[in-house]
Length: 285
Length: 285
Image (tube, rainbow over all chains, first blue to last red; front, side, top):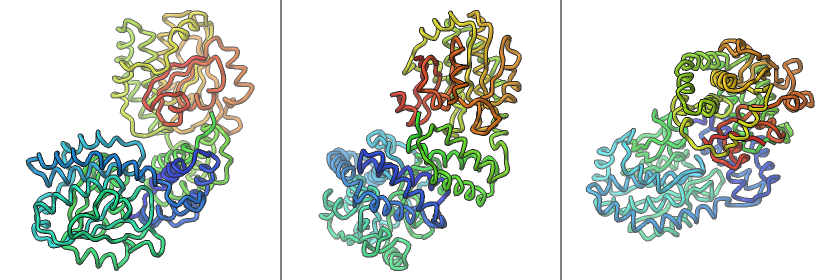
């Protein structure tokens, strides 16, 4: 997906959020916004939103000297979702359709996204998404793919949200014969995206047959870029690909054979999917 | 009120809205956004939001050659609010507290503001605001001022909304002995702000004892700038000043003796007033 013009001001809003996580110093906030604007101004916008996000967040790091502005907020959401874990497990186990309930929860958890916006209500979203109608609903295709799958590629999105991903994977492992799972995480901090540290913190590393793969964030050495041929090979070798969130959709929406689980949180993504902001999606293809 | 950093991306969103009113040509949209960004980049941000809006909308006019991008949308809202006029008058006349109901309607009409955001629901807002609690409520001071007033300065905000202003003024004229009203409108098109053409279109020019005054939009010859000493003199000579909407609040919030009627439609205004987005305000001072 290419960047829309609406994304240009939105990146600046995102940068301002990040700047405020870093410091209360308004002069520094202004410096960061001005540097981001200068960079956007000189940039070709025929890129995908994650590619521009990489540039924007590099500027924030360079201007502030802070490597991971979202460090505290990531820990905060890992902690509160870990506390919710037993209750969420109960919800899945008591459900007449545990897999579908786990899918719904995994989508609800996707609201913890400081890329899209910073004013969300996790508990309200969970209640809502457990009952909400899907706007794109390829659940039976999803089930058929799982039935035939020996291995999964699971593209995670945000810290905190990965507790919900853990529950979805545990539910899948209980119901289907999956031998190997490749859990894809960002290879370095970017917005509040989950990294290996988050996965370890919430216990995903203990899941049977699970290995990690690092996704690059536009910096050499951070992992395989989602847009690379190497990553396409990883996708092709996977029996089923589960992709969480807007960022992965933006980077990979043109590829086939991926199940996208997400909540449409911005008008640009909603329009691309032909749905409304707030709608929930399980899209195969 | 000085501009906040949050306003910087918001001006670009506003420019994109305007660009889309002008043309479907995405290349032109991009040209406009890039020109706006370049200007914002080079600008000192220690101004009030309306001052920056004047610059931003001048760029849009210069880039597109279109003098009034909001022309159609202003007519549209003048037309639908004129159609609502008889029903709204009934609501006021049947109310146990006609003045308060007219104030509430005048605030509800303030949602027609393409500066703040373009996705609003007028009918829903009216139902809501007729019942909603005020977050700042200086109604008794407002009534006391009206009781003593021979003349009113009324600062209008948007096209369409001015039908609601007409109803408020008619209600005031029925209950109080006001001899003269100075109705302040923008002296040239800016966003969907009301101009003399709109006031005439909705019949405000027929109100007894009413005269018009033009408020400048940053272009010489368009009227008296709200921040000028000349305008302060106009305010001082008025027995009561009724100011509608965010833009007038942003320009005049530091002055005393003004009743601000508005709905807080963006986080920056809400924070300045100590309220939440969506809250309604009748603030004297």
